[in-house]
Length: 222
Image 1 (cartoon, rainbow, N blue to C red):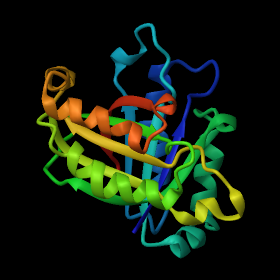
Image 2: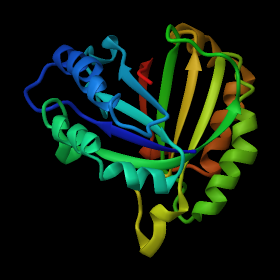
Image 3: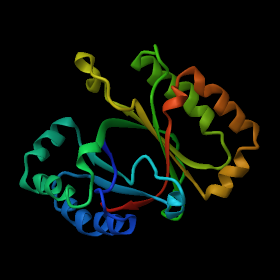
C-alpha cells in the first residue's frame, strides 16, 4: 500500500476550534464517501501547542491506497473532486503540501487515541543521496530510536523515489510518527542514555535545522 500525507494550515481568519470542528465532522464525512480509500487518519495538534506558539501546520491527514494506480483512478472521481472543493472552506490551500510515501514500522506496539502522536517532518543531510538517507534511517537509526523507553509505536514514512524524478525535490524527505503515553513520559526519556544516543546519531543523516515537530492526537476516520 501507499500513503498520501497532507499537511496544512487553517484558512486565514478561521479560529482553531472552528477549523478542527469542520475538518473532523463535515470534511471527514465527504472523504468517507470516496471509494478506494483504505484508511484515513486525522492528526490535530494539542490545544496547549497554541499557547504562545503557532505550529507549522494545523492538521496532518494520512490516506492509504492500494497503490499509485488506484490513487490516480480515484483522483478522477466526483467524490474526490468534492473533497478538493471543500478544502477551501477550512484550509489555506495555497500553503498546503503533500507527500506520497511507503511506511516502515520500526516499533510495532499497540497505540490508542489517548496517546500523543509526535509527528516530525524530516529533510536529509545536505549532500546525502535519497537512497542512502532512507537506508540509514530504516536500518541504522530506526532500530536505535525504537529503544527509547517512552516510545510505544514508531512508524517511518519514506517518500517514494518517483517524487525526485527530473530533479524535483519534495518539501520533506520523510515523516516520523512516534506514539507516547504523554509529554511527561518523553520528558523523563530525555534523561536516558537511549535518548542521548538517538540525538547523537541524527547528524549522520538528517538536516537538523529543518526539523518540524507537531504534537498531536490521532483520529481514525476510516
